[in-house]
Length: 277
Image 1 (cartoon, rainbow, N blue to C red):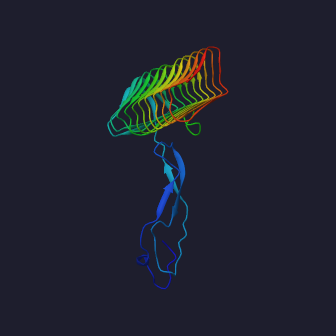
Image 2: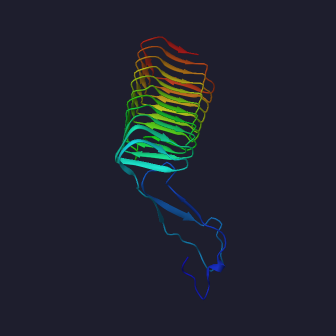
Image 3: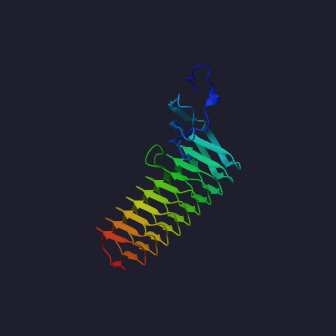
């Protein structure tokens, strides 16, 4: 603090400022603004507070090179950059965080009870299986974290920090099951089935292209599915919190049934029977 007059010191100021940043625990490398407000700060009537903006820097320390299998130690945080290749396997330990920024993984990625998993602009040949993660799971965010290609199955199970899968190409199937914190799937191309089930916190699935069945079932917190296409069945059932189903298309059966809350279904097309009940 600066600006004191007539011999005053910081002893005339009491309380704590409130500061925030636009960065989150899932943010990538770069700079983010820090802004502060008075919070609980008080002082004599001879002074007012003004605040200078700050900068939070998330530094880049991504690994490069080739690794014949890699296990992220428990509680550690590891980033693989665009120059990295991981062969055989990539495992994420308990309480650990993984950030992939353009790396190539020639094998499966597995996490169990880890923290944050962030996969951006990656090429992954093996299945990706993420289970019981406590932080955010981000596989593309439509902004700084660009699309990835997963040439196998993508499975997220019982993750609690919210999940985003955006603009990815997934050979599939793509399955999200038992997650909490909300699910977002947008702009993905899945050459197999897409299934979201038993999840809470709400499900948003927009503009996905699915070659297999498209199924959202037994989810809580509301379901929104707009502008998706499926070459097989399209099924929205047993969800709670209301559903909004707009301008989707399928070449097979279209079914919206046994959902609770407000139901909004409009502009959808199907070549098979349409069931809404």
